[in-house]
Image (cartoon, rainbow, N blue to C red):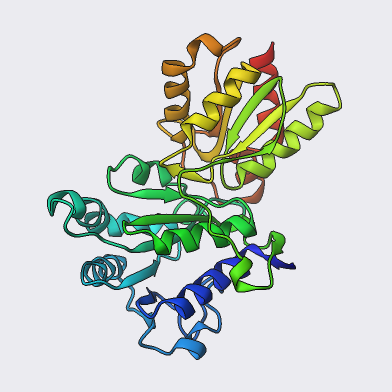
Length: 327
């Protein structure tokens, strides 16, 4: 094992996928010589050349359109959109074309493309560079959405996304890019992670917290703090948002009988709302208390550090939600 940062795990996944399959290529703004805005594509141009690491003009719509077209012809493009906020300019190609091709072609065609993009705050980048828009994509039939919470998952989910025959949105929280974790030295030992399967990060029996991305470490911190009071919290990392591991969440709820859902995205109409509604539908008899959500307020992300810190969810707010649920 070697300890590497989250962003290096992304880079390693791209490197390994391109080594293994000549149909995999990268497309995006400043991904070549510059190595990407967050250096996810560093050194890949030198290794694979400009025909497989393709720098584009500043046009997210063109990037998405080229990726969809290339995927329809049998290539496996990995498109980078440097901030998730800019996926607003890709929606026609992703939502109306990529997501619907398999259905409209009667299963005879597919779009094996990946769109990588960072979301979230923590860098004081302001309201146009800090949004979490994953719920938009999870709402669209035909799109898969994953959100890794650590370096090993950043590698494993990206490799699985590149292998997938259908379009996958890989959402990376930019505040996690510096996180360190272990990854096997041998390429054959680096595991892919099945899309649609979550994991239990911390077992417990008093309450369940379901989280993804940066909220996972927040949930772990809240659980650790409550453990000092004898409150045993189970933490689930969804990993995959569409499809999501409904069975794992229900099984956990059936043991703990209390549920909190946490994410950095705006709370209203978010991933947490869907999980809460679904568990109320199929797990109502297991509930001993109200399902509680933790998310950002319904407002644009502020720029100033103190304001952004107050805006973003944190371990203290998750802990408070657990206390309300258990009261």
